[in-house]
Length: 396
Image (tube, rainbow, N blue to C red; front, side, top):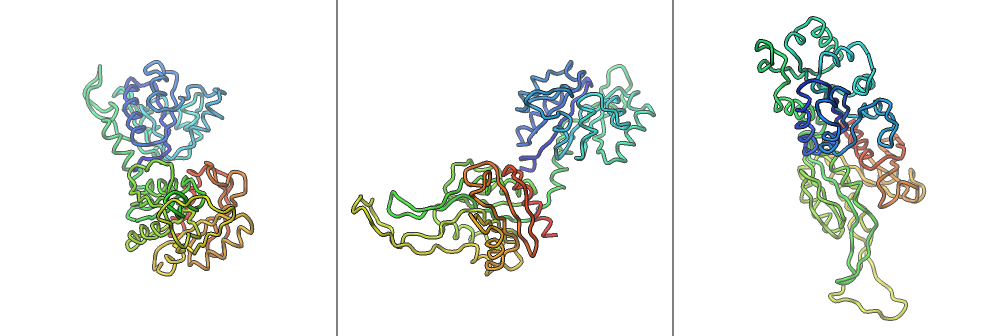
Protein backbone atom coordinates (compact mmCIF):
# COMPACT_ATOMS: atom_id res chain seq x y z
CA UNK A 1 0.00 0.00 0.00
CA UNK A 2 2.97 2.31 0.54
CA UNK A 3 3.28 2.89 -3.23
CA UNK A 4 -0.45 3.15 -3.92
CA UNK A 5 -1.12 6.38 -5.82
CA UNK A 6 2.48 7.59 -5.57
CA UNK A 7 3.49 9.61 -8.60
CA UNK A 8 6.84 8.33 -9.89
CA UNK A 9 8.73 9.35 -13.02
CA UNK A 10 11.13 6.78 -14.45
CA UNK A 11 13.92 8.04 -16.71
CA UNK A 12 15.50 5.30 -18.83
CA UNK A 13 18.82 5.85 -20.59
CA UNK A 14 20.96 3.91 -23.03
CA UNK A 15 22.82 1.50 -20.76
CA UNK A 16 22.86 -2.15 -21.74
CA UNK A 17 20.77 -2.98 -18.66
CA UNK A 18 17.92 -0.75 -19.85
CA UNK A 19 15.87 -3.92 -20.28
CA UNK A 20 15.76 -4.28 -16.49
CA UNK A 21 13.69 -1.11 -16.31
CA UNK A 22 10.82 -3.22 -17.64
CA UNK A 23 10.78 -5.32 -14.47
CA UNK A 24 10.91 -2.28 -12.22
CA UNK A 25 8.13 -0.49 -14.12
CA UNK A 26 5.95 -3.60 -14.11
CA UNK A 27 6.41 -3.94 -10.33
CA UNK A 28 5.69 -0.25 -9.72
CA UNK A 29 2.50 -0.50 -11.77
CA UNK A 30 1.38 -3.62 -9.87
CA UNK A 31 2.10 -1.81 -6.59
CA UNK A 32 -0.35 0.94 -7.50
CA UNK A 33 2.09 3.71 -8.42
CA UNK A 34 1.11 6.36 -10.98
CA UNK A 35 3.87 6.27 -13.54
CA UNK A 36 5.40 8.58 -16.13
CA UNK A 37 8.15 7.24 -18.37
CA UNK A 38 10.86 9.12 -20.27
CA UNK A 39 13.37 7.45 -22.59
CA UNK A 40 16.46 8.72 -24.37
CA UNK A 41 17.00 7.89 -28.03
CA UNK A 42 19.67 5.35 -27.04
CA UNK A 43 17.32 3.69 -24.57
CA UNK A 44 14.76 3.27 -27.36
CA UNK A 45 17.29 1.20 -29.30
CA UNK A 46 17.64 -1.23 -26.39
CA UNK A 47 14.01 -1.54 -25.27
CA UNK A 48 11.01 -0.25 -27.17
CA UNK A 49 8.78 2.59 -25.95
CA UNK A 50 5.82 0.35 -26.80
CA UNK A 51 7.00 -2.18 -24.20
CA UNK A 52 7.22 0.52 -21.54
CA UNK A 53 3.86 1.97 -22.56
CA UNK A 54 2.17 -1.41 -22.15
CA UNK A 55 3.87 -2.12 -18.82
CA UNK A 56 3.22 1.34 -17.35
CA UNK A 57 -0.22 1.88 -18.85
CA UNK A 58 0.78 5.40 -19.92
CA UNK A 59 2.32 7.14 -22.93
CA UNK A 60 6.11 7.30 -22.99
CA UNK A 61 7.97 10.56 -23.62
CA UNK A 62 10.82 10.13 -26.08
CA UNK A 63 10.97 13.58 -27.67
CA UNK A 64 11.26 16.91 -25.86
CA UNK A 65 9.41 18.53 -28.77
CA UNK A 66 6.45 16.13 -28.62
CA UNK A 67 3.31 18.26 -29.01
CA UNK A 68 0.80 15.41 -29.13
CA UNK A 69 -2.27 15.40 -26.92
CA UNK A 70 -0.47 13.19 -24.43
CA UNK A 71 1.82 15.96 -23.19
CA UNK A 72 1.51 19.64 -22.46
CA UNK A 73 5.29 20.03 -22.32
CA UNK A 74 6.95 16.63 -21.80
CA UNK A 75 9.91 17.71 -19.68
CA UNK A 76 7.69 19.84 -17.42
CA UNK A 77 4.98 17.18 -17.12
CA UNK A 78 7.59 14.56 -16.22
CA UNK A 79 8.98 16.79 -13.49
CA UNK A 80 5.59 16.74 -11.72
CA UNK A 81 6.25 13.73 -9.49
CA UNK A 82 7.01 12.63 -5.94
CA UNK A 83 10.10 10.63 -6.91
CA UNK A 84 12.27 10.58 -10.01
CA UNK A 85 13.92 7.20 -10.63
CA UNK A 86 16.82 7.25 -13.09
CA UNK A 87 17.91 3.83 -14.31
CA UNK A 88 20.17 2.76 -15.70
CA UNK A 89 22.07 5.98 -15.08
CA UNK A 90 24.87 6.19 -17.58
CA UNK A 91 28.02 8.27 -17.19
CA UNK A 92 26.63 10.52 -19.91
CA UNK A 93 23.30 11.31 -18.25
CA UNK A 94 24.97 12.00 -14.90
CA UNK A 95 27.48 14.32 -16.58
CA UNK A 96 24.66 16.22 -18.25
CA UNK A 97 22.63 16.45 -15.04
CA UNK A 98 25.65 17.61 -13.03
CA UNK A 99 26.32 20.45 -15.47
CA UNK A 100 22.78 21.47 -16.36
CA UNK A 101 22.68 20.19 -19.92
CA UNK A 102 19.14 19.58 -21.16
CA UNK A 103 19.36 18.46 -24.77
CA UNK A 104 16.78 15.65 -24.71
CA UNK A 105 13.70 14.69 -22.72
CA UNK A 106 15.34 12.84 -19.80
CA UNK A 107 18.03 15.43 -19.05
CA UNK A 108 15.53 18.27 -19.54
CA UNK A 109 13.03 16.71 -17.14
CA UNK A 110 15.81 16.21 -14.58
CA UNK A 111 16.66 19.90 -14.85
CA UNK A 112 13.02 20.86 -14.30
CA UNK A 113 12.53 18.33 -11.51
CA UNK A 114 12.16 19.31 -7.84
CA UNK A 115 11.37 15.85 -6.46
CA UNK A 116 13.97 13.56 -4.86
CA UNK A 117 16.03 11.66 -7.42
CA UNK A 118 17.04 8.03 -7.00
CA UNK A 119 19.86 7.25 -9.39
CA UNK A 120 20.99 3.71 -10.26
CA UNK A 121 24.36 3.97 -12.07
CA UNK A 122 25.38 1.20 -14.47
CA UNK A 123 28.39 1.21 -16.79
CA UNK A 124 31.78 -0.31 -17.47
CA UNK A 125 34.01 -0.39 -14.38
CA UNK A 126 36.61 1.94 -15.84
CA UNK A 127 33.94 4.45 -16.82
CA UNK A 128 32.46 4.26 -13.33
CA UNK A 129 35.82 4.71 -11.62
CA UNK A 130 36.94 7.54 -13.90
CA UNK A 131 37.54 10.71 -11.84
CA UNK A 132 35.15 12.66 -14.08
CA UNK A 133 32.29 10.25 -13.33
CA UNK A 134 33.08 10.19 -9.63
CA UNK A 135 33.21 14.00 -9.58
CA UNK A 136 29.85 14.28 -11.32
CA UNK A 137 28.30 11.77 -8.92
CA UNK A 138 29.64 13.77 -5.97
CA UNK A 139 28.07 16.94 -7.37
CA UNK A 140 24.72 15.22 -7.73
CA UNK A 141 24.88 13.74 -4.23
CA UNK A 142 25.62 17.19 -2.82
CA UNK A 143 22.39 18.30 -4.48
CA UNK A 144 20.50 15.55 -2.70
CA UNK A 145 20.51 12.76 -5.27
CA UNK A 146 20.35 9.29 -3.72
CA UNK A 147 22.75 6.86 -5.40
CA UNK A 148 21.68 3.22 -5.47
CA UNK A 149 25.16 1.79 -5.45
CA UNK A 150 26.05 -0.51 -8.35
CA UNK A 151 27.07 -4.12 -7.84
CA UNK A 152 30.58 -5.46 -8.27
CA UNK A 153 30.31 -8.50 -10.50
CA UNK A 154 29.55 -9.78 -13.97
CA UNK A 155 30.85 -6.93 -16.15
CA UNK A 156 31.81 -8.09 -19.62
CA UNK A 157 35.36 -7.31 -20.75
CA UNK A 158 36.65 -6.08 -17.39
CA UNK A 159 37.72 -7.39 -13.98
CA UNK A 160 35.09 -8.05 -11.33
CA UNK A 161 34.74 -4.53 -10.02
CA UNK A 162 32.01 -2.00 -9.43
CA UNK A 163 29.68 -0.86 -12.18
CA UNK A 164 26.86 -3.35 -12.69
CA UNK A 165 23.31 -2.12 -12.12
CA UNK A 166 22.22 -2.78 -8.54
CA UNK A 167 20.17 -5.88 -7.87
CA UNK A 168 16.48 -5.39 -8.71
CA UNK A 169 15.44 -6.18 -5.13
CA UNK A 170 17.86 -3.53 -3.84
CA UNK A 171 16.25 -0.94 -6.10
CA UNK A 172 12.76 -1.98 -4.98
CA UNK A 173 13.76 -1.78 -1.30
CA UNK A 174 15.17 1.71 -1.81
CA UNK A 175 11.93 2.94 -3.35
CA UNK A 176 9.69 1.34 -0.73
CA UNK A 177 11.98 2.54 2.05
CA UNK A 178 11.85 6.10 0.77
CA UNK A 179 8.07 6.28 0.80
CA UNK A 180 7.76 4.36 4.08
CA UNK A 181 10.17 6.75 5.81
CA UNK A 182 8.47 9.75 4.21
CA UNK A 183 5.08 8.65 5.52
CA UNK A 184 3.67 11.56 7.48
CA UNK A 185 0.95 9.64 9.34
CA UNK A 186 2.83 6.48 10.26
CA UNK A 187 1.47 5.08 13.51
CA UNK A 188 -1.77 7.09 13.27
CA UNK A 189 -5.25 5.65 12.95
CA UNK A 190 -7.56 7.59 10.65
CA UNK A 191 -11.32 7.15 10.30
CA UNK A 192 -12.91 8.52 7.13
CA UNK A 193 -16.63 8.54 6.38
CA UNK A 194 -17.84 8.68 2.80
CA UNK A 195 -20.90 8.65 0.62
CA UNK A 196 -24.59 9.19 1.40
CA UNK A 197 -26.87 7.58 3.95
CA UNK A 198 -30.34 6.17 3.24
CA UNK A 199 -33.26 6.17 5.69
CA UNK A 200 -35.95 3.67 4.74
CA UNK A 201 -39.64 4.49 4.53
CA UNK A 202 -40.55 0.87 3.85
CA UNK A 203 -38.78 -2.19 2.50
CA UNK A 204 -38.37 -0.54 -0.91
CA UNK A 205 -38.37 3.26 -0.61
CA UNK A 206 -36.08 5.59 1.28
CA UNK A 207 -35.13 9.22 1.80
CA UNK A 208 -31.47 10.10 1.66
CA UNK A 209 -28.73 12.41 0.54
CA UNK A 210 -26.70 12.82 -2.60
CA UNK A 211 -23.08 11.75 -2.52
CA UNK A 212 -20.84 9.61 -4.68
CA UNK A 213 -18.25 8.91 -1.99
CA UNK A 214 -15.44 9.94 -4.32
CA UNK A 215 -14.07 12.60 -1.97
CA UNK A 216 -14.08 10.30 1.05
CA UNK A 217 -12.47 7.44 -0.86
CA UNK A 218 -9.77 9.79 -2.14
CA UNK A 219 -9.12 10.98 1.42
CA UNK A 220 -8.86 7.41 2.71
CA UNK A 221 -6.36 6.54 0.00
CA UNK A 222 -4.35 9.72 0.60
CA UNK A 223 -4.14 8.98 4.34
CA UNK A 224 -3.09 5.39 3.66
CA UNK A 225 -0.34 6.61 1.33
CA UNK A 226 1.04 8.59 4.25
CA UNK A 227 1.35 5.43 6.33
CA UNK A 228 -1.84 5.69 8.40
CA UNK A 229 -4.01 2.78 9.45
CA UNK A 230 -7.26 3.75 7.74
CA UNK A 231 -10.83 2.69 8.44
CA UNK A 232 -13.27 3.83 5.76
CA UNK A 233 -16.93 3.89 6.79
CA UNK A 234 -18.89 4.06 3.56
CA UNK A 235 -22.55 4.59 2.86
CA UNK A 236 -24.16 3.15 -0.30
CA UNK A 237 -21.71 3.93 -3.11
CA UNK A 238 -20.71 2.40 -6.43
CA UNK A 239 -16.98 2.38 -5.80
CA UNK A 240 -14.53 -0.47 -5.39
CA UNK A 241 -12.99 -0.94 -1.96
CA UNK A 242 -9.48 0.57 -2.03
CA UNK A 243 -6.74 -2.03 -1.41
CA UNK A 244 -5.06 -2.09 1.97
CA UNK A 245 -7.86 -0.18 3.71
CA UNK A 246 -10.46 -1.56 6.13
CA UNK A 247 -13.88 -0.71 4.72
CA UNK A 248 -17.10 -0.87 6.73
CA UNK A 249 -20.22 -0.65 4.59
CA UNK A 250 -23.31 0.93 6.15
CA UNK A 251 -26.63 2.28 4.96
CA UNK A 252 -28.26 4.52 7.56
CA UNK A 253 -26.98 7.35 9.72
CA UNK A 254 -27.32 5.26 12.88
CA UNK A 255 -25.33 2.42 11.28
CA UNK A 256 -22.62 4.91 10.29
CA UNK A 257 -22.52 6.30 13.82
CA UNK A 258 -22.18 2.82 15.33
CA UNK A 259 -19.41 1.85 12.90
CA UNK A 260 -17.44 5.01 13.68
CA UNK A 261 -17.87 4.68 17.44
CA UNK A 262 -16.65 1.08 17.26
CA UNK A 263 -13.32 2.44 15.95
CA UNK A 264 -13.24 5.74 17.82
CA UNK A 265 -11.45 4.83 21.06
CA UNK A 266 -8.00 4.42 19.47
CA UNK A 267 -8.49 6.83 16.57
CA UNK A 268 -6.15 9.79 16.12
CA UNK A 269 -7.90 11.56 13.25
CA UNK A 270 -11.51 11.51 12.04
CA UNK A 271 -12.56 13.05 8.73
CA UNK A 272 -16.30 13.17 8.22
CA UNK A 273 -16.85 13.66 4.51
CA UNK A 274 -20.08 11.65 4.31
CA UNK A 275 -23.31 13.39 3.36
CA UNK A 276 -25.39 12.13 6.29
CA UNK A 277 -29.17 12.45 6.01
CA UNK A 278 -30.55 14.88 8.59
CA UNK A 279 -33.93 13.17 8.91
CA UNK A 280 -35.40 9.67 8.96
CA UNK A 281 -39.01 8.48 8.93
CA UNK A 282 -40.50 8.22 12.42
CA UNK A 283 -41.80 4.77 11.51
CA UNK A 284 -40.62 2.25 8.94
CA UNK A 285 -43.36 0.16 7.36
CA UNK A 286 -42.73 -3.58 7.36
CA UNK A 287 -44.22 -3.91 3.90
CA UNK A 288 -44.17 -1.97 0.67
CA UNK A 289 -46.49 1.02 0.89
CA UNK A 290 -48.91 1.25 -2.00
CA UNK A 291 -49.90 4.42 -3.78
CA UNK A 292 -52.75 6.08 -2.03
CA UNK A 293 -54.19 9.58 -1.93
CA UNK A 294 -52.38 12.17 -3.99
CA UNK A 295 -51.16 14.04 -0.92
CA UNK A 296 -49.71 12.23 2.07
CA UNK A 297 -47.68 13.39 5.03
CA UNK A 298 -44.52 11.61 6.12
CA UNK A 299 -43.53 12.17 9.73
CA UNK A 300 -39.76 12.47 10.12
CA UNK A 301 -37.40 12.83 13.07
CA UNK A 302 -33.77 13.93 13.32
CA UNK A 303 -31.01 11.44 12.73
CA UNK A 304 -28.05 11.46 15.14
CA UNK A 305 -25.60 14.31 14.60
CA UNK A 306 -22.55 12.08 14.34
CA UNK A 307 -19.95 14.82 14.16
CA UNK A 308 -21.37 16.82 17.06
CA UNK A 309 -21.35 13.66 19.17
CA UNK A 310 -17.73 12.97 18.29
CA UNK A 311 -16.85 16.56 19.16
CA UNK A 312 -18.29 16.17 22.67
CA UNK A 313 -15.88 13.32 23.39
CA UNK A 314 -13.01 14.52 21.22
CA UNK A 315 -10.18 14.40 23.72
CA UNK A 316 -6.88 14.74 21.87
CA UNK A 317 -8.27 13.53 18.56
CA UNK A 318 -8.21 15.68 15.42
CA UNK A 319 -11.71 16.15 14.01
CA UNK A 320 -12.42 17.42 10.51
CA UNK A 321 -15.82 17.85 8.95
CA UNK A 322 -17.20 18.82 5.56
CA UNK A 323 -19.78 21.52 4.99
CA UNK A 324 -21.69 21.21 1.74
CA UNK A 325 -23.52 24.52 1.38
CA UNK A 326 -25.49 26.46 -1.22
CA UNK A 327 -25.05 29.94 0.27
CA UNK A 328 -23.20 31.80 3.05
CA UNK A 329 -20.42 29.25 2.71
CA UNK A 330 -17.81 30.66 5.06
CA UNK A 331 -20.30 31.92 7.64
CA UNK A 332 -21.99 28.52 7.99
CA UNK A 333 -18.65 26.69 7.98
CA UNK A 334 -17.24 28.89 10.75
CA UNK A 335 -20.37 28.23 12.80
CA UNK A 336 -19.96 24.49 12.31
CA UNK A 337 -16.33 24.67 13.39
CA UNK A 338 -17.25 26.19 16.77
CA UNK A 339 -20.57 24.48 17.43
CA UNK A 340 -19.24 20.97 16.85
CA UNK A 341 -15.82 21.44 18.47
CA UNK A 342 -13.89 20.74 15.26
CA UNK A 343 -10.29 21.38 14.32
CA UNK A 344 -10.99 21.83 10.62
CA UNK A 345 -13.98 22.42 8.36
CA UNK A 346 -13.74 21.83 4.62
CA UNK A 347 -16.51 23.74 2.90
CA UNK A 348 -17.73 23.68 -0.66
CA UNK A 349 -20.61 25.30 -2.50
CA UNK A 350 -22.34 22.39 -4.21
CA UNK A 351 -24.02 24.76 -6.69
CA UNK A 352 -20.64 25.91 -7.99
CA UNK A 353 -19.48 24.33 -11.24
CA UNK A 354 -16.91 21.64 -10.44
CA UNK A 355 -17.74 21.44 -6.74
CA UNK A 356 -21.06 19.61 -6.75
CA UNK A 357 -22.08 16.00 -6.44
CA UNK A 358 -21.01 13.11 -8.67
CA UNK A 359 -18.09 14.98 -10.26
CA UNK A 360 -14.37 14.25 -10.10
CA UNK A 361 -13.34 17.75 -9.00
CA UNK A 362 -13.91 19.91 -5.95
CA UNK A 363 -13.39 23.51 -4.81
CA UNK A 364 -12.46 23.48 -1.15
CA UNK A 365 -12.37 26.27 1.42
CA UNK A 366 -10.51 25.18 4.56
CA UNK A 367 -11.42 26.89 7.82
CA UNK A 368 -9.42 26.32 10.99
CA UNK A 369 -8.94 28.54 14.04
CA UNK A 370 -9.36 32.07 12.72
CA UNK A 371 -7.90 31.24 9.32
CA UNK A 372 -9.55 30.71 5.96
CA UNK A 373 -7.62 29.01 3.15
CA UNK A 374 -9.18 28.83 -0.30
CA UNK A 375 -8.13 26.23 -2.84
CA UNK A 376 -8.76 26.40 -6.59
CA UNK A 377 -10.74 23.78 -8.47
CA UNK A 378 -8.76 20.55 -8.61
CA UNK A 379 -9.36 16.83 -8.87
CA UNK A 380 -10.71 15.17 -5.76
CA UNK A 381 -7.54 13.05 -5.58
CA UNK A 382 -5.39 16.17 -5.54
CA UNK A 383 -7.73 17.90 -3.10
CA UNK A 384 -7.46 14.87 -0.82
CA UNK A 385 -3.67 15.15 -0.81
CA UNK A 386 -3.89 18.87 -0.03
CA UNK A 387 -6.28 18.17 2.84
CA UNK A 388 -4.10 15.43 4.32
CA UNK A 389 -1.03 17.67 4.01
CA UNK A 390 -2.96 20.44 5.79
CA UNK A 391 -3.97 18.07 8.61
CA UNK A 392 -0.34 16.98 9.00
CA UNK A 393 0.67 20.64 9.17
CA UNK A 394 -1.97 21.45 11.79
CA UNK A 395 -0.90 18.43 13.85
CA UNK A 396 2.64 19.83 13.81
